[in-house]
View 1 (spheres, rainbow, N blue to C red):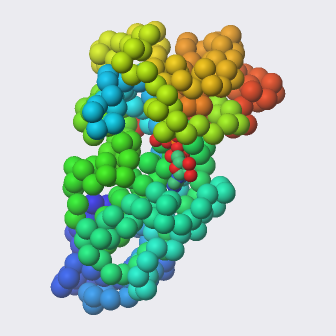
View 2: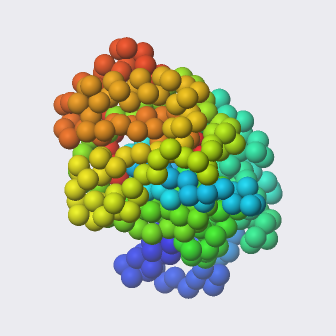
Length: 343
Ligand code: ATP
């Protein structure tokens, strides 16, 4: 999409007599498809071929769940969910470059994560390349910042960013809707991560309804030094006898009304019934965040990450410093909510 946008912008600027025989061209100077694009000198050729210098960059944003409910366990083993997803300003960076030899070459910086076929980036690449029967290859660099196995959908965000990136790089022409349909084959959070923002997510994660973003506020996100398996949490969840159900509809109304207290009063996550029992540190961090001035604090997804919502930056900063000093969590971020890919 960005690719075509830039193509037509360049065309309308009258830069040369361009006849795009195959709508493919070469841009020299190792240029990236992003906002700095126009600062670089471009030499465009109408010949189909050499695209080694073409690079696409994508950001993969983490999410938290402002509310998470499980309605039931379906006979096929999947859980029917009702949750409010929200993008946060913590991201991984991905770059994609075409290469002639088939296959994926994945390089990971900032995390000890296997760069093999099980990595969600490679799985998303295989899915799209097979669907489109593309026999070229791709080199991918993944700079990891989102904590792993944290309940922040880091892997899903990377997979979604890979789908967006390859869609642009190879001009696959997939709509967002189609990418979402393909993405759900790899993971329930991937359809949401294709666009991000504030969304009501239902079904197994594939039924998405955009909502108004929360009012301006500050966030502290803390990931204690434990890794939680999402599969373990769902396996141990008593979906048919949950002690409470979050008021997701009420939270959606509070979002529409821009009512921060209406949102924070309704922050609940039924997966805490499993993860908090297993790891009491989560409750300690929640309690400490509230003592330090949070409007409310909650575990995200299947955990163990906890986020606290603060009205002002100073209080959030003090809370983050205290949580670091008290060594309650190995990774602590002061951050904010942000919009999705099109924001
Ligand atoms: P969710 O909130 O969607 O349940 P999560 O934040 O709990 O996800 P992830 O960070 O996505 O968890 O990682 C879950 C598992 O996926 C990890 O055990 C990890 O080994 C594997 N994984 C595969 N690819 C990636 C990737 N690109 N980034 C992070 N984890 C990945």
